[in-house]
Amino acid sequence: MTAKPYTTNGHEPAGASRYRAWSRWVLVCSMIVVLSSCGGKKDAESETIQLPDDVPEETVMSAETPQDLPEDDGTASETVADGAPAPADEAASKEDEKLKEIAKQRFEIEMAREPRFDRQAALRKIVLEKHKIDINVLPADRLSNKDVEALIDAKALEKASEEYTAEERQDVVLQAEKEYPLFQKGDMVTVTTKVRGKVSGVVAAIYPTKVKIGHVLLLISDISTPDPACFNEEVCRKRREHFVRVNFDIGKDDYMRAARKRLTKKVYRQQGFLPVGNDWVHVQDLIDAEIAPLVDEMATAHQAEREQRVRKRVEEQMRDEGLTMSDVGSSEAQSTAIPADDDAAADELPSDATSDDEFEDDGLEEELDDFFE
Image 1 (cartoon, rainbow, N blue to C red):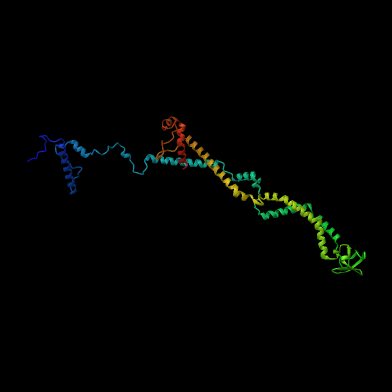
Image 2 (spheres, rainbow, N blue to C red):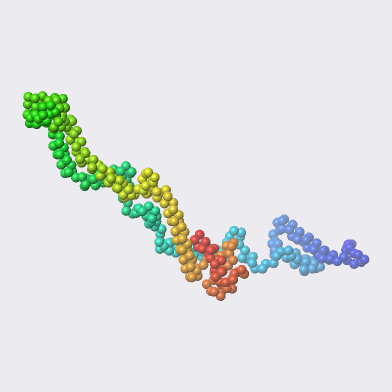
């Protein structure tokens, strides 16, 4: 006895036929799976399955091709794994590396041609303007303050010796010997005393306070002329020295002091020293403390300007030659490159650009950063 399908008022519900066909299809597929798992030798793909006649064709197609799968639009073959660059991006990256190397080489060449900062010239100019000292003519060996003082003394003595010569001093020495002759035993002398007047004769003996001339014994303190010191060797020597000093050495010393005063500033500056308060400080110490930091700032600014000029020159050269960096793979890229053709460039202008110049300026900074990265 065959069971009749469920009916309503003698009519079969809508979709009942399709439901029965789908159920039979599920049953057949389950049987295939069971047979395959039990070691069936037939290939499931090559085995022909006879479906019941009442299974609609569209049902079979819907089972073979699920409706929720997206259609293949031909782009699947071009999909790359996450993290792996697309072939076009990889080629652009290699081309960019070549352009970077070209830019780097040109930058180095142009930098070699640019004039470098002359630190010595800058130091010389500042010191010359501020302190009136030319550091290029300073002695190679730096002297200490003590050595400079000794050098000043030597120069002052040299000047004084030119004014007060050794020959002149010798004349004064001879004059001192005449003024203060040294009498010894056996010398013929004539003296004037306060008590006896003139006494002449040979010096017979000399005592600490007396002298015997001929047969007359006189107190040295009673002798008026010559100077009583002439009968005392130690006192006579001192009187002669005093005479020479008063009549020659003092004058020379005064002249030397004046010459030293005149020479101090000149010699110190010749040796590279500058007056600071009551002391003399070498200019190198002032350079290290005050001027060198200023020159360092000048050197840094000069280098920055130098690199900026070269960078701009290289950028213009490469842009004129059409060597521009690709923006492929850049998250900030708006276009692939700056076209060489003006018409093409106008077609590819971004919506917020108003001219070719504005477009080039917008991409210029990014390209330079890539060139000199």
